[in-house]
Length: 308
Image (cartoon, rainbow, N blue to C red):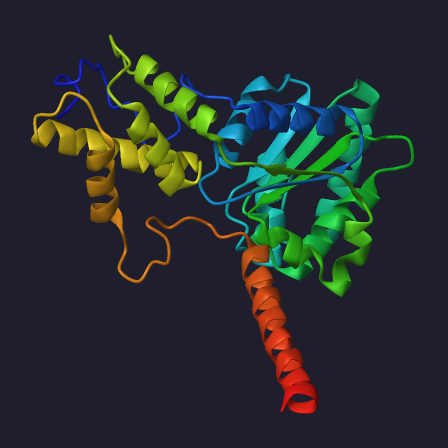
Protein backbone atom coordinates (compact mmCIF):
# COMPACT_ATOMS: atom_id res chain seq x y z
CA UNK A 1 0.00 0.00 0.00
CA UNK A 2 2.70 2.49 0.99
CA UNK A 3 5.60 1.00 -0.96
CA UNK A 4 5.05 2.99 -4.16
CA UNK A 5 4.60 6.23 -2.20
CA UNK A 6 8.01 5.82 -0.56
CA UNK A 7 9.72 4.49 -3.70
CA UNK A 8 10.05 0.91 -2.42
CA UNK A 9 9.72 -2.36 -4.30
CA UNK A 10 8.44 -4.32 -1.29
CA UNK A 11 7.63 -3.91 2.39
CA UNK A 12 10.97 -3.40 4.15
CA UNK A 13 9.94 -4.35 7.67
CA UNK A 14 8.07 -7.63 7.28
CA UNK A 15 8.12 -9.74 10.44
CA UNK A 16 8.88 -12.98 8.57
CA UNK A 17 12.68 -13.42 8.40
CA UNK A 18 14.06 -12.89 4.91
CA UNK A 19 17.03 -15.15 4.16
CA UNK A 20 18.17 -12.66 1.50
CA UNK A 21 18.15 -9.68 3.87
CA UNK A 22 19.86 -10.72 7.09
CA UNK A 23 21.35 -7.83 9.06
CA UNK A 24 24.22 -8.93 11.25
CA UNK A 25 25.02 -6.54 14.09
CA UNK A 26 28.27 -6.90 16.01
CA UNK A 27 26.62 -9.10 18.62
CA UNK A 28 24.94 -11.22 15.92
CA UNK A 29 28.25 -11.70 14.13
CA UNK A 30 29.86 -12.69 17.42
CA UNK A 31 26.95 -15.01 18.19
CA UNK A 32 27.21 -16.72 14.79
CA UNK A 33 30.95 -17.14 15.21
CA UNK A 34 30.43 -18.71 18.64
CA UNK A 35 27.77 -21.09 17.30
CA UNK A 36 30.16 -22.21 14.56
CA UNK A 37 32.93 -22.58 17.13
CA UNK A 38 30.55 -24.64 19.26
CA UNK A 39 30.39 -27.20 16.44
CA UNK A 40 34.13 -27.25 15.77
CA UNK A 41 35.40 -27.05 19.36
CA UNK A 42 33.87 -30.41 20.39
CA UNK A 43 32.57 -29.01 23.68
CA UNK A 44 29.22 -30.78 23.15
CA UNK A 45 26.85 -28.44 25.05
CA UNK A 46 26.29 -24.76 24.25
CA UNK A 47 23.69 -22.37 25.72
CA UNK A 48 22.53 -19.32 23.74
CA UNK A 49 20.05 -16.90 25.30
CA UNK A 50 18.32 -13.84 23.85
CA UNK A 51 15.38 -11.63 24.79
CA UNK A 52 12.11 -12.01 22.90
CA UNK A 53 12.38 -10.59 19.37
CA UNK A 54 16.16 -10.13 19.48
CA UNK A 55 16.83 -12.21 16.36
CA UNK A 56 17.89 -15.61 17.67
CA UNK A 57 15.74 -17.42 15.08
CA UNK A 58 17.37 -15.37 12.32
CA UNK A 59 20.77 -16.22 13.79
CA UNK A 60 19.95 -19.94 13.82
CA UNK A 61 18.78 -19.74 10.21
CA UNK A 62 22.08 -18.11 9.26
CA UNK A 63 23.94 -20.91 11.06
CA UNK A 64 21.95 -23.66 9.34
CA UNK A 65 22.52 -22.03 5.94
CA UNK A 66 26.28 -22.05 6.56
CA UNK A 67 26.58 -25.71 7.59
CA UNK A 68 28.55 -28.15 5.48
CA UNK A 69 26.98 -31.31 4.14
CA UNK A 70 28.90 -33.44 6.64
CA UNK A 71 26.77 -32.17 9.54
CA UNK A 72 23.68 -34.21 10.43
CA UNK A 73 21.18 -31.67 11.75
CA UNK A 74 18.08 -31.82 13.92
CA UNK A 75 16.31 -28.58 14.91
CA UNK A 76 13.44 -28.75 17.39
CA UNK A 77 11.47 -25.48 17.49
CA UNK A 78 8.54 -26.69 19.60
CA UNK A 79 9.86 -28.54 22.65
CA UNK A 80 6.47 -29.02 24.35
CA UNK A 81 6.46 -32.73 23.64
CA UNK A 82 6.05 -35.90 25.62
CA UNK A 83 9.02 -38.22 25.94
CA UNK A 84 7.90 -40.61 23.18
CA UNK A 85 7.03 -37.70 20.88
CA UNK A 86 10.47 -36.22 21.58
CA UNK A 87 12.32 -39.38 20.56
CA UNK A 88 10.02 -39.88 17.57
CA UNK A 89 10.90 -36.39 16.33
CA UNK A 90 14.65 -36.94 16.79
CA UNK A 91 14.46 -40.25 14.94
CA UNK A 92 12.56 -38.75 12.01
CA UNK A 93 14.93 -35.78 11.65
CA UNK A 94 18.05 -37.94 11.85
CA UNK A 95 16.76 -40.67 9.57
CA UNK A 96 16.61 -43.31 12.30
CA UNK A 97 13.86 -45.80 12.92
CA UNK A 98 11.31 -45.41 15.71
CA UNK A 99 8.86 -48.04 16.84
CA UNK A 100 8.12 -46.59 20.25
CA UNK A 101 11.05 -48.39 21.85
CA UNK A 102 13.45 -45.91 23.47
CA UNK A 103 16.14 -48.55 24.03
CA UNK A 104 16.25 -49.41 20.32
CA UNK A 105 16.46 -45.70 19.42
CA UNK A 106 19.42 -45.22 21.76
CA UNK A 107 21.18 -48.19 20.21
CA UNK A 108 20.64 -46.80 16.70
CA UNK A 109 21.70 -43.31 17.78
CA UNK A 110 24.90 -44.71 19.30
CA UNK A 111 25.65 -46.55 16.04
CA UNK A 112 25.07 -43.32 14.12
CA UNK A 113 27.58 -41.47 16.30
CA UNK A 114 30.15 -44.21 15.72
CA UNK A 115 29.57 -44.11 11.95
CA UNK A 116 29.93 -40.32 11.91
CA UNK A 117 33.18 -40.59 13.84
CA UNK A 118 34.57 -43.03 11.28
CA UNK A 119 33.50 -40.78 8.36
CA UNK A 120 34.66 -37.52 9.95
CA UNK A 121 31.08 -36.20 10.13
CA UNK A 122 29.26 -34.41 12.94
CA UNK A 123 25.81 -34.44 14.55
CA UNK A 124 24.18 -31.18 15.64
CA UNK A 125 21.04 -31.05 17.78
CA UNK A 126 19.48 -27.59 18.24
CA UNK A 127 16.68 -27.17 20.76
CA UNK A 128 15.04 -23.76 20.26
CA UNK A 129 12.69 -22.30 22.89
CA UNK A 130 14.61 -24.45 25.35
CA UNK A 131 13.44 -22.30 28.28
CA UNK A 132 10.13 -24.20 28.20
CA UNK A 133 11.72 -27.66 28.08
CA UNK A 134 10.60 -29.77 31.05
CA UNK A 135 13.36 -30.81 33.41
CA UNK A 136 12.86 -34.49 32.52
CA UNK A 137 13.44 -33.76 28.81
CA UNK A 138 16.53 -31.70 29.59
CA UNK A 139 17.81 -34.71 31.48
CA UNK A 140 17.04 -36.95 28.48
CA UNK A 141 19.03 -34.55 26.29
CA UNK A 142 21.98 -34.74 28.68
CA UNK A 143 21.89 -38.53 28.65
CA UNK A 144 22.11 -38.52 24.83
CA UNK A 145 25.66 -37.24 25.19
CA UNK A 146 26.54 -40.33 27.24
CA UNK A 147 26.21 -42.40 24.06
CA UNK A 148 29.40 -40.91 22.66
CA UNK A 149 32.33 -43.17 23.23
CA UNK A 150 35.50 -41.59 24.53
CA UNK A 151 37.36 -39.77 21.77
CA UNK A 152 34.46 -39.60 19.30
CA UNK A 153 33.52 -35.95 19.89
CA UNK A 154 31.02 -35.79 17.01
CA UNK A 155 27.93 -34.60 18.92
CA UNK A 156 27.06 -30.92 19.55
CA UNK A 157 23.92 -29.93 21.46
CA UNK A 158 22.71 -26.31 21.44
CA UNK A 159 20.12 -25.13 23.96
CA UNK A 160 18.64 -21.87 22.69
CA UNK A 161 16.02 -19.81 24.48
CA UNK A 162 14.99 -16.75 26.41
CA UNK A 163 16.92 -15.68 29.55
CA UNK A 164 14.49 -17.76 31.62
CA UNK A 165 16.51 -20.74 30.39
CA UNK A 166 19.17 -19.81 32.95
CA UNK A 167 16.57 -20.06 35.72
CA UNK A 168 15.39 -23.43 34.40
CA UNK A 169 18.97 -24.68 34.34
CA UNK A 170 19.46 -23.73 38.01
CA UNK A 171 17.26 -26.67 39.06
CA UNK A 172 19.24 -28.94 41.40
CA UNK A 173 18.35 -31.94 39.25
CA UNK A 174 20.21 -30.39 36.31
CA UNK A 175 23.58 -30.00 38.04
CA UNK A 176 25.13 -32.76 35.85
CA UNK A 177 23.92 -30.87 32.76
CA UNK A 178 25.22 -27.50 33.98
CA UNK A 179 28.64 -29.05 34.50
CA UNK A 180 28.72 -30.04 30.82
CA UNK A 181 27.96 -26.59 29.38
CA UNK A 182 31.15 -25.61 27.59
CA UNK A 183 30.00 -22.31 26.03
CA UNK A 184 27.45 -19.66 27.05
CA UNK A 185 26.47 -16.57 25.06
CA UNK A 186 23.77 -13.92 25.39
CA UNK A 187 22.60 -12.13 22.25
CA UNK A 188 22.39 -8.41 23.04
CA UNK A 189 19.86 -5.98 21.59
CA UNK A 190 20.83 -3.30 19.07
CA UNK A 191 22.63 -0.13 20.09
CA UNK A 192 21.36 3.19 18.71
CA UNK A 193 23.88 3.05 15.86
CA UNK A 194 22.96 -0.55 15.07
CA UNK A 195 19.28 0.43 15.06
CA UNK A 196 20.06 3.17 12.53
CA UNK A 197 22.10 0.81 10.35
CA UNK A 198 19.39 -1.85 10.58
CA UNK A 199 16.67 0.54 9.37
CA UNK A 200 18.84 1.71 6.48
CA UNK A 201 19.72 -1.90 5.64
CA UNK A 202 16.08 -2.94 5.43
CA UNK A 203 15.19 0.11 3.33
CA UNK A 204 18.07 -0.62 0.95
CA UNK A 205 16.94 -4.20 0.43
CA UNK A 206 13.42 -2.95 -0.22
CA UNK A 207 14.67 -0.88 -3.16
CA UNK A 208 14.74 2.55 -1.52
CA UNK A 209 16.22 5.26 -3.78
CA UNK A 210 16.84 7.63 -0.87
CA UNK A 211 17.43 6.86 2.78
CA UNK A 212 16.12 9.89 4.64
CA UNK A 213 12.63 8.43 4.99
CA UNK A 214 13.13 8.30 8.77
CA UNK A 215 14.53 11.42 10.44
CA UNK A 216 17.33 11.14 13.00
CA UNK A 217 14.88 12.12 15.75
CA UNK A 218 12.54 9.34 14.60
CA UNK A 219 15.33 6.75 14.66
CA UNK A 220 16.40 7.84 18.14
CA UNK A 221 12.84 7.47 19.40
CA UNK A 222 12.43 4.11 17.66
CA UNK A 223 15.51 2.84 19.48
CA UNK A 224 14.30 4.22 22.79
CA UNK A 225 10.82 2.64 22.75
CA UNK A 226 11.98 -0.65 21.19
CA UNK A 227 15.11 -0.82 23.37
CA UNK A 228 16.92 -2.12 20.30
CA UNK A 229 14.65 -5.16 19.80
CA UNK A 230 14.61 -6.00 16.05
CA UNK A 231 11.04 -7.35 16.02
CA UNK A 232 9.67 -4.20 17.66
CA UNK A 233 11.72 -2.01 15.32
CA UNK A 234 10.01 -3.76 12.40
CA UNK A 235 6.55 -3.28 13.90
CA UNK A 236 7.09 0.42 14.67
CA UNK A 237 8.62 1.23 11.28
CA UNK A 238 5.94 -0.62 9.32
CA UNK A 239 3.14 1.12 11.24
CA UNK A 240 4.87 4.51 10.86
CA UNK A 241 5.19 4.08 7.07
CA UNK A 242 1.52 3.18 6.82
CA UNK A 243 0.55 6.19 8.93
CA UNK A 244 2.89 8.47 6.98
CA UNK A 245 1.33 7.33 3.73
CA UNK A 246 -2.18 7.95 5.08
CA UNK A 247 -1.18 11.44 6.26
CA UNK A 248 0.82 12.23 3.09
CA UNK A 249 4.15 12.71 4.90
CA UNK A 250 7.19 11.73 2.82
CA UNK A 251 9.50 11.91 5.87
CA UNK A 252 8.76 10.03 9.09
CA UNK A 253 9.45 12.30 12.05
CA UNK A 254 9.42 11.70 15.79
CA UNK A 255 5.77 12.80 16.06
CA UNK A 256 4.70 10.03 13.68
CA UNK A 257 6.66 7.51 15.74
CA UNK A 258 4.90 8.71 18.88
CA UNK A 259 1.56 8.37 17.13
CA UNK A 260 2.42 4.84 15.99
CA UNK A 261 3.60 3.78 19.43
CA UNK A 262 0.39 5.09 20.98
CA UNK A 263 -1.61 3.08 18.45
CA UNK A 264 0.39 -0.06 19.23
CA UNK A 265 0.39 0.32 23.01
CA UNK A 266 -1.45 -2.37 24.93
CA UNK A 267 -3.63 -1.05 27.79
CA UNK A 268 -1.98 -1.86 31.09
CA UNK A 269 1.49 -2.40 29.57
CA UNK A 270 4.18 -0.94 31.83
CA UNK A 271 6.30 0.13 28.86
CA UNK A 272 5.20 1.87 25.61
CA UNK A 273 5.64 -1.46 23.80
CA UNK A 274 5.85 -5.05 25.11
CA UNK A 275 9.60 -5.08 25.71
CA UNK A 276 11.23 -7.90 27.65
CA UNK A 277 12.30 -6.77 31.12
CA UNK A 278 15.50 -8.43 32.30
CA UNK A 279 14.76 -10.82 35.18
CA UNK A 280 17.26 -8.98 37.37
CA UNK A 281 15.32 -5.70 37.06
CA UNK A 282 12.62 -6.74 39.49
CA UNK A 283 15.21 -8.12 41.84
CA UNK A 284 17.04 -4.78 41.93
CA UNK A 285 13.77 -2.97 42.58
CA UNK A 286 13.25 -5.16 45.61
CA UNK A 287 16.81 -4.50 46.76
CA UNK A 288 16.27 -0.75 46.35
CA UNK A 289 12.99 -0.88 48.23
CA UNK A 290 14.58 -2.93 51.02
CA UNK A 291 17.44 -0.42 51.24
CA UNK A 292 15.04 2.50 51.55
CA UNK A 293 13.02 0.72 54.24
CA UNK A 294 16.22 -0.10 56.14
CA UNK A 295 17.34 3.54 55.97
CA UNK A 296 14.01 4.68 57.36
CA UNK A 297 14.22 2.10 60.13
CA UNK A 298 17.73 3.20 61.14
CA UNK A 299 16.64 6.85 61.08
CA UNK A 300 13.64 6.05 63.28
CA UNK A 301 15.80 4.20 65.82
CA UNK A 302 18.31 7.06 65.85
CA UNK A 303 15.57 9.60 66.45
CA UNK A 304 13.97 7.49 69.22
CA UNK A 305 17.14 7.02 71.25
CA UNK A 306 19.11 10.20 70.66
CA UNK A 307 16.88 13.05 69.47
CA UNK A 308 13.55 12.47 71.17
